[in-house]
Length: 266
Image 1 (spheres, rainbow, N blue to C red):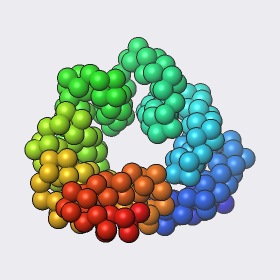
Image 2: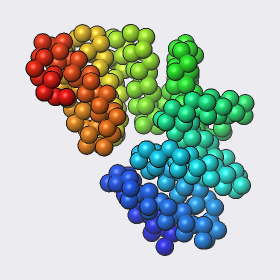
Image 3: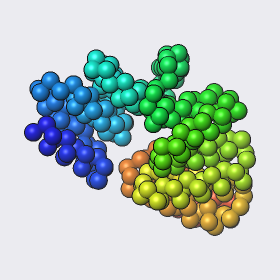
């Protein structure tokens, strides 16, 4: 029964992205693994439950379940899984702008020996680079992105490499290095498309359109990219991202001299 609940939860998460149903299924799986005293299975279910809760915007619940998963993995000596919990906690604290928690966690984790699992190490470095970027240290961020990229390349982690391309593109955007940003967004779009990753594709469409707009280049192409990104964010039920991308689309239309159209898309 525990395994069946887990299989159903995986299907709802990965194939259907039905997050409310996925959250219920992962909770059921966690409870059933708990009844079996299978702490590893329970920790995995709690981790995935938290990921579904993040998609639903449930910050408190996601944080609580990731902390519980980390405690179970620490008890059972599952160090690699514990580090994955920590990376997910960093992502959660970043997603919900919990700056003080995020800073404290980076300080604690940076004082520990690095994870022996290369995948966990690369994911941590990717999060660290984004934190360094948010603190205005672009030189450190670029160096850390490069270190993470080396590991993702060695482990043939295509999704990790796509994420690095997108994150690096955002760094170039901030530096107003639009030529580099456009090239990096194009690379990210191609990588996410090869992986059939809807969220990554939509992020890259929005990023590429925004970079072209900022550079005042290929505005018709930027408009098309931004229109598709807005539609996709709505399909993905990500209203905040859809609204932010819509604002870029309005700016793009105004730059093209399409003021009436800009008003109609709001």
